[in-house]
Amino acid sequence: MVLNCRHVWEYISGYLDNTLDEQTRIDVERHLEHCEICSAILDSTRNILILTADDRVFELPVGYSERLHARLKEAILESPPPKLESS
Amino acid sequence: MQSQDNERDEAGLIAEVLAGKTDAFHDLVRPYERSVYLMALSMLRNEAEAEDVAQEAFIKAYRNLGRFRSEARFSTWLIAIALNEARARLRRKEPALTDSIDDQDGSVVPAQLTDWREIPSESLERAEIRSLIRRALESLPLAYREVFVLRELEQRNVKETAETLGITSASVKMRLHRARIMLQKQLAPQLASTSPLKRGRRFPWF
Image (cartoon, rainbow over all chains, first blue to last red; front, side, top):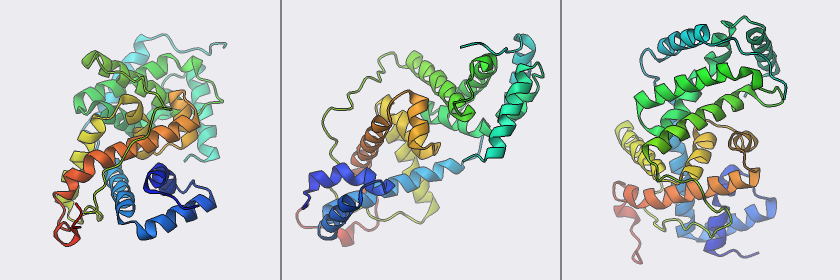
């Protein structure tokens, strides 16, 4: 099937996640080969995801873990121990 | 992703806490300190508030541990609690914020520019772009932002994201797609203007 640009835009996310069925993927690729605009949209969307992933490796605030466990310790002392509740 | 062993350990730690060995809770949650904080930070964009929300979420998880059901993943359950805390905080800050969106409604059109195709290699430039991405993320409707954060930052799969948010997998995919295209639409024009490739990649029809 020959896809137009608007169709391809709907498939960009599926294409990036590799969740399109075989035929759709081939149709999308065929379109991308000759469409400068759609292939640029695909590239820029992929770039955003790659740069977003950079944020996964950030530093936690200094002392975060210590403060968290100190606060938890207080809460555990203050609260009654949790008991299994029947659903 | 967790191994079977990890899951068994978790079930054991949860049982210990529920049997009264409450200190085991510290070990139970240690592996999730980072993802709970990251979830809160991505939603609130403020370190002090994110830390506060993370603490509240862990305390809430402790108090409600008796309600946790083993058919759910503990991490999914915990992240959902953190998400609810972050949402409640956001609503207090921005009462107008709404997360009602229509998953069936129309499509999102990307920015049709051809001059931002490569990722800058300079770390300074990458850092600048990341801060632009964070700002753009903040402007997304909450329902899209949550899906984007869970999938792209927390690296939850579609099923876990759907469980955390209480929506269908189809909605997760749809919202993720729209979130990505909305970000592209907003960011591509800003990034094109900073791109060193701009000059070589001009097309006469733009």
